[in-house]
Length: 187
Image (cartoon, rainbow, N blue to C red):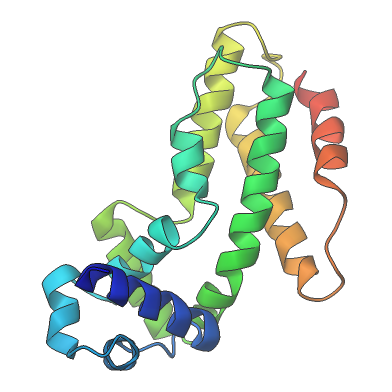
């Protein structure tokens, strides 16, 4: 196992158990049995480390999935179901990590600035999904009456809500039902 892998495994564990706001680089280094300086040889800051955890230690990487979609390939409804299932899983896995940021406005602001610097953030999946939907419209496979960005926001917002509910009430509607209902407006 490489040093980078040790850092990512430790960071994923600390961030999931303590939340991003309370996960310090010192604590992550300790969990990896490394010096804090070793972390900075691999990652510029905690936000870069957080993004690497999302991408490399989250089984369902939503941004990678959405970036790989090709308009015109495959059945749209099946693709939407894959997106919904992946997004629900992704948000359920990452919600405990990111939720603590909202309790500290200055930390949230600093985190947002770091995300902007890195070209990342919660808007990226929505933009990628909107681009896919727009591409399907251009190919004549989706209704042009629907706004792709609004549809992307509705899809991902519903997935976030579903994941949020899973912590309190066991989740929301089944992914198939979400896609079937959405399909009535898009198809």
